[in-house]
Image 1 (cartoon, one colour):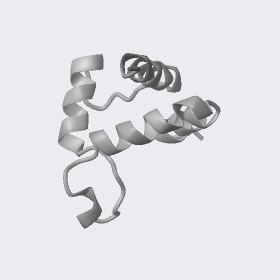
Image 2: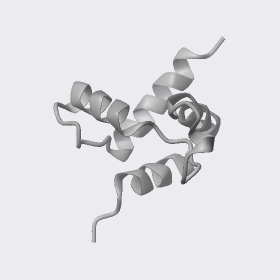
Image 3: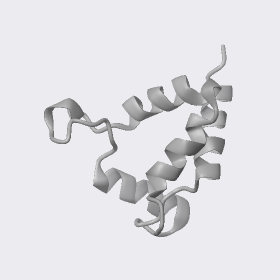
Image 4: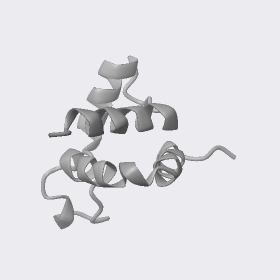
Length: 83
């Protein structure tokens, strides 16, 4: 059985405590507006936006980042936001 991409990504980030604040901030930044008003009340990107971003990044709206790519993105965000 294949593990969903977000489970593998969460596990990769969980092993890197220094990325936890960055991951949380990105989760909230990328969540659709008013996410707390809609079931399942989780901060997640809107499907159309996520599809667009995946198509521009990978050429397929159904693609998802690998855990390694997710960690690299969060490292990049962390480094570029240093004062």
